Image (cartoon, rainbow, N blue to C red):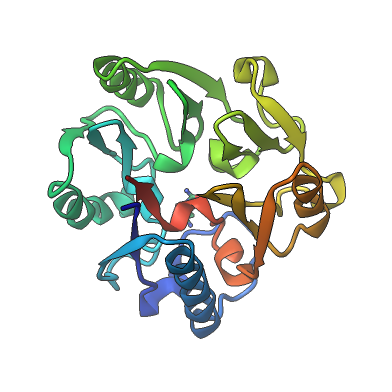
Length: 253
Ligand code: CIR
């Protein structure tokens, strides 16, 4: 059965790392938006596994950054933001039940938000959070299970998946100007609507169903026009902390 590993929102979430806005985060509203997200995963058939939130780590809801599942291996990351490194261990303990673990080691840094596994290719963003050592180490793991690795320079945004959102194994939504699209090879590119720049986010749930950020309805319409069943969700408080839809879960199975 497909599994979703998720982590709750701590009371300290209003102290999450933010890159700009200065708008205060409403923790209760964030929690209710997160609950709707978890409910959507459950309705789509995922078995939920819940890692308890940790108030010492305001960003711990962004569990995606702590581990990447590649085939039979769970890569335990070394997050680029130093205060987030303590989020990793409780997640590793959960994943150890189902996977062989491979740990990234210093001087590597890598956030799971920079990694996109599509078919037999692992795309890895080179960003402010993910360095070349991180790319080399995850590339070795990918090689062990027969997957190839494609590094992609990321500009302007936090992570690769802030700007390149997988929709299925062949399709991605891209924010123009943030990556060298040649690295995406034969993937079908759908562009984020310019008026919705940096507001789109998505999480494919299988069978053509895609959870999408309600804040970018025109981009969602583009996907619906291609035959995807889109399910909008309001994640305004998550977006204030630079998060999107992929970052709040690790899906596998
Ligand atoms: C951070 O700056 O690390 C968090 N406030 C946001 C992380 C979002 N993660 C993701 O999109 N994978």
